[in-house]
Length: 206
Image (cartoon, rainbow, N blue to C red; front, side, top):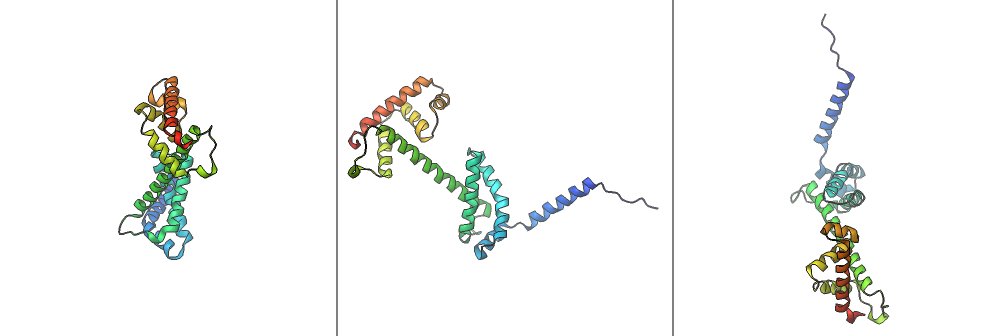
């Protein structure tokens, strides 16, 4: 009598998992899922897209230097944008993954710009901290940014770099010193000179 064929349980489980993975790869069609969202706001389709792309977008952003918290926030907002903009997707122009990656990149750029504007406003506030604004002379945020940027063009290369790192990129003085490989005292000295220059250039606004 032929001996019975015995397959260890662990091998059966691995084979079943491999089969399931194959079925998922075969059935997962992001173009069709996006079309379903655009056509009927299909929540199941969105859940599949989210589960597939959100961790990938997060990983992509983290490899690009974003923190885990920021990367997760952008990944979620990216997929919510896919939900809102599904009708705009054209598979003839780009693949679903490329389209979603582009949305994520634009989200990251928008956040970086908002952070830069916020930090540039902080530079103005430091320059103007001793001079209260008059209601009829208050400048808009955009005007302030433009004036500060224009004034910064008159800084030396070294002064500009420390201002850029300390205010526009948000590094501490010690971190600036480490990144530029210069003493902490040099960083503080360059910042003092740079702020003095900026104050003189923006005196008419005070």
